[in-house]
Image (cartoon, rainbow over all chains, first blue to last red; front, side, top):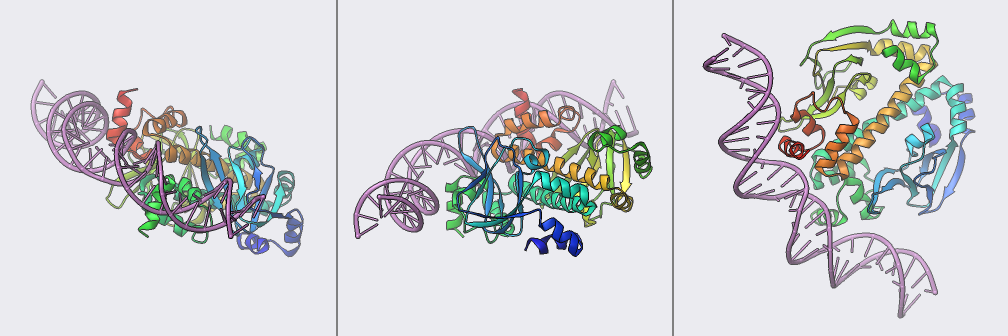
Length: 186
Length: 186
DNA sequence: CTTACTTTTTGACATAGGTCAAAGGAAAAT
DNA sequence: ATTTTCCTTTGACCTATGTCAAAAAGTAAG
C-alpha cells in the first residue's frame, strides 16, 4: 500500500524504495488514541495503511473542531508542526483501530537530503494537500450547509458514515443539529 | 528582493543563485491586467517585486470571488494549474501597476531537476502556503464577519486599504454591504 | 467644471442556520 | 440483562448576515 503510493508519485528504484521503507515503522493503534496533543511537537509523519484518523483543535469555548480526516492511503500529520518542528495547534486522533506506518522527522530529513526524489515526493504531496484544502475552503466559504455536506460525501465517501456526526458537523462548519436535519432530508 | 527571498529559505551559493535568477524574466504589468483566465493553463510562476495581485473565480451567478491576494515579496500563481499544467480554475489579475519576475514551467522543471535545493525551496514554499491557507480556512469557517476582517488586517495589513472593498468582502466570504457596516464601527 | 461611471454607504426586510433544552436510541460497561 | 454513558434527533425560538433598492461619495472622461 505505502509502496504503491510512493511509486505512483515518483519512480523510485527498487533499492531506493527498500531503503526508504526501512525508515518507517509499522504501528498498530487503537481507536480513540491521541497521537499528538495541542502544544506538542509532532515528531512523526504517519501513513494510514488501515483505519481513519482526524486532526482537530479546541475553540476557546472548549468545543472540538475537526480540521481534517485522514483515510486509508493518505499521509497524516500536523503538517506545520512536523516540518517546522513547532508546537502543534492540532490534536491528532485515531478514530478506528488502525495500522499506520510512521517516520520520524529526523529520519525524514535524512531521506530528504539523501534523495533528491524524496524532496520531490514531499513537494508533490504538499501541493496535493494544498489543492484539497483550497477545495474545502471554497466549499466551506460559499456553499449552503447542505451543499457542504455534498462536498463531504464526494471528498470522503467512505468516511462519512463511519465517524460520529459531530465530528463531521464541525469539519463542515455547522452544528450537529443542522447536519442531523440535513441527513433527514437525504 | 527576489534574491533575498530565495536565500532566506535555502542557502544557495552565489553561482547557483545567479543561475537560478537568470531563468526569471522581469515584467512590468499595468493595473487591471489579467495574467491568466479561467480554463487557461497557467504557464508561469510570478514573484511580486512591487504591486498587488489577486486570484479570483466566478460563481455560477457570475459574481467574482477573490481567492487570494498576492502582495510584495510573495510568489503568485494558480498553483495547481502551474505545477500540474491543468486548466486553471482561477483568474489572476494585477490590481496596481506592478513589477513581477516570472519563470515558465519548463524552466522551473529544469531547475527542479538540476538543483536538489530547488526542490527543497518549492517544498518549503508549498508548506508555507499550506499553513496560510489553513489559517484562512479556520478564520473563515468559525469566526464572525467582523473577526474575519480582523484576520484580514493581520494577514494583509498593507493591502486592506488599497483594493476595492468588494474584493476583500468576497475574499472573506461576506457581502460588501456587511463589510462596509463593519468598517463603519471600526 | 460637468457628465458619466464606479464604488461605497445606508435602510428595510427576509432567512439560513445557530442556541438551548429535552427526548430517543445505541453502545459500552458492570 | 441492566445501568450508564454517549450520540443523534427534534422542537421552539433567535440572531447574524444576506438580499434588494436607492442614495451618496468618489473617480475618470470630455
